[in-house]
Length: 365
Image (cartoon, rainbow, N blue to C red; front, side, top):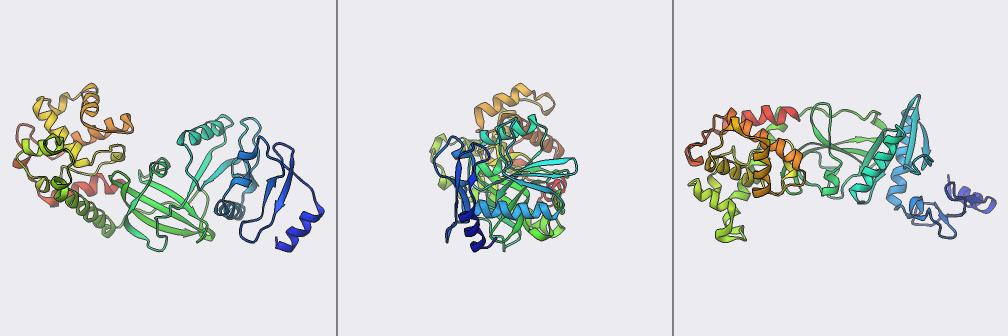
């Protein structure tokens, strides 16, 4: 609607809130997107659109138009009485009904779980789209380094081809931005492939992610090893713990400098983002613990892994961390690692490990 049409509607109509029944005012400014606001603050103040940012309002409008284009009936902020929830969009095509949430701000992840629990109670699948992170350059597509906050990481999904990915939406460029084939480096750092799809070309269910090309797979290996090498080269000088540094002590036990550690230590694994330690640190700690306690690969119990994680690692998801440790033990078995020998005596060819990386990691992306 044009501004003059909105002004005419405001002067000739009265508006009430569909949730609380209180009167609303239609605000038509020069900067902020036109929107409704309660004349008097009410109990539903925090649940309606007057606290939404202009970006959220514009994005919600664009997504409503998108779902309409692909054949859905769309209700904006439809109230679901049974669970007292109001998704950004409630979309329906035939018998298929979805609650769509376009999330622009950071909220407690528990709130996301609670909302999804509500949707599950009424058997309505939810679709969460994050606003494309500000640090993602939508014009620079391809394989690159990115940072994702813990909140953003909580929305990473694994598709049918085991590709960790995040589909976001950018209202400014009216594009869906795929942050796909995510490979964790450390902390909030990842390697990812960025690709964009204009709103007008998107489908629902959303378009699938294409596999990595051979050239892109090689980029992943090169990028990961570059970051690993940089970290290990500087590790001695960046230590804050001196002689109490467990990682440096483990290097000493294995008679090797950090920068000379073989590439199978610090090897990328699916799910490694749950470790707050860099992979070189916990993987070397695991090798040392297995050697010192003379635990054979075939005799590693779940209890032993739990004790190892509690003593040597900082993790944010214990269950996933246990699976990742088992993955690494299996990898060591595949390369015929001998626990009775020092790491410095078992330096392997990069070519073999690169092939292993492509088979175990890239092929699943």
